[in-house]
Length: 479
Image (cartoon, rainbow, N blue to C red; front, side, top):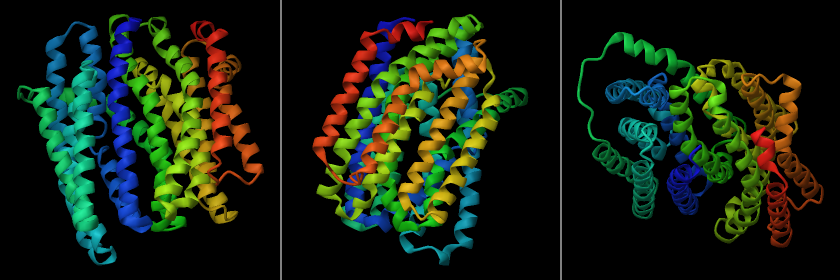
């Protein structure tokens, strides 16, 4: 592994990710204050539509993100260039079809939705196309390891969305927010194409489209279920508790998204290298370090980051968003669960490189089902409200981490018992966080600001991470 270059590329990923996260959090706080819980719930519903639209191309863009590094590793530059055209054309066709279906649904259900939500869905007809262009440019730039260019596109989108949506919300309420979102995607799409350079047009070959679908459909299923592993909570909150509670719970998801940017940055810097390395030398041992070293890094970095959120988020909510105070306890539960989901993301590309990612589909399907069952049992059955939703996510994420990482270790010739032991060697800090969560919850202070206690937990987890680094985590993960 070329650590200095990886550190540089990780820096680009991290800067882009955390600037985006900071702006997203700022945007979320300002929109929450302007729109209130119900308005933020309407905004979240349109966000769900935009998120689901990304899977309309059946994973072709995701497949291109895999094929470009492999082609470059094989020394086939022309083939890598051709994949860009396939990604753009297929994405635009798929999003246009999705927009037509959304338009029909909008006409059918027009009278059943509030005016602000209707307006947001109308703007979404265009945003899904623009979002598709942005996603394709980001995918190709990342696949070619042009991390600086990708960062520019990502940060520009975050800045324009924040400025446009906040200015629109101040001037015209929720309608202005959706107009600002539309303008933000227009600017980001134009910039992405300018940095990317339009690919040379060519005739699409059916055999290559089939090749992309063969790789992409399982990837799309994986990412779709992976998305639902996180955001099925929104659907369940909307169904079980209503739009107002959905708006409140959105703040917990914002906090989780901010935390998730750390593992996403690590994976974003390592993944193209792992794929390219496997293209150069298609052997499991060639990608061992790229697979397990990120896990070790994340097991060190995530606990202190989680405790920072424990400390800062409640202070911000009480000071600026008192109507959202009931989210503090669910938020703290939820971000502990993000340790397991984030740690799991360290091995996100290994199965893709090995073309074994289809084996993860039943695991994800079972975990999404588990999440839904837990939400129903804890919310509808036991009446735990948003805290029950957060507990369901924590349990689900920990189960998924253990099952998925054990599967990856299987392809490194580790038997299940050995794999579970190795998982616990890097994952036990998450279990410590769960114990701390239970101890604080037993005192009844989980929903309070309590800066002194949170600061103490931050110091404790930071010391734990430093001690683990000092006493040989590198040796554990290098084995």
